[in-house]
Amino acid sequence: MRRYLFNRLWQSLVTLLLATIVVFLGVRALPGDPALALAGEDRDPESLRAIRQQYGLDDSMLVQFWKFVSHAAHGDLGTSIRSGESVNTMLRNALPVTIELSMLAILVASVIGVGAGVVAAVRRGRPAEWAANALALLGLSVPNFWLGLMAILYLSVALRLFPASGFVPFFTDPIANLHHLVLPACILGTGLSAVIMRQTRSSMLDALSADYIRTAEAKGLPPRSVVGRHALRNSLIVVVTIVGLQLGALISGAVVTERIFALPGFGKLTVDAVFQRDYPVIQAVVLVTATAYIVINLLVDLLYSVIDPRIRVRGEA
Image (cartoon, rainbow, N blue to C red):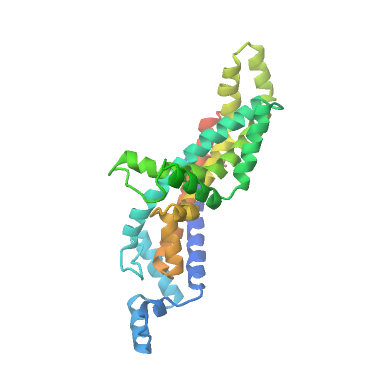
């Protein structure tokens, strides 16, 4: 177990370093010069030279990369070129919004997806399966931005059931916080629930045709116990994998939903930084996203042995 963890941590650090290098070079390949944007109308050579020197933009690529990595290793992600605010502070303000939204979306997607997948597998060939497949196809086909706009139009503007935009911190008012996030979380979890439903149905069909299920049925176990304790538990490995990977994707990919509902989260911060050529913020955003992916993948691997006792994490894995 220790050897496995050491190998995974070493591989994760190498992956994180490679991702940092790619992002560092990719950000600087973007068209536009942040010094020109900061200079405004005063674009004489002396002003541009002073701005580049102040923010280290006149250093070589190697020097800039070393400064970024060395500061990041000490927990300092730099200062925003545009606002002068600490990037750490900007992330602390934006990341909790996206994490809460992503966790709620995962919860919605898991409840709907796993429930519909189990029903579709148990009721195979019946109207319940057709309805579940139709909902899954609808969830995969309808874009989130269109669904979000329709939800705002009918549920927020017409019926006034949910706020159309805005955010309230959880510790300020938990009820208002959930009231603002329920609608975007449902919109964000719709597509993911369709993916979970299809994978759960497929895994459940394989499990229900296995020998140990027939043995459990032959022993006279109740159908609920056969489906829940045996078939579903062995089908959850695929679900956990999807949920783990999609959690990282939701943290970095909730841009459209956050823009539609005017949420001050990670997505808005990323879009603003890209448009403003704010190098420190873009680098910090990608570094946090890559770290989230790596940590979540590691946790998913470790959960395999908890969900399925047949799987054991070995040092040679």
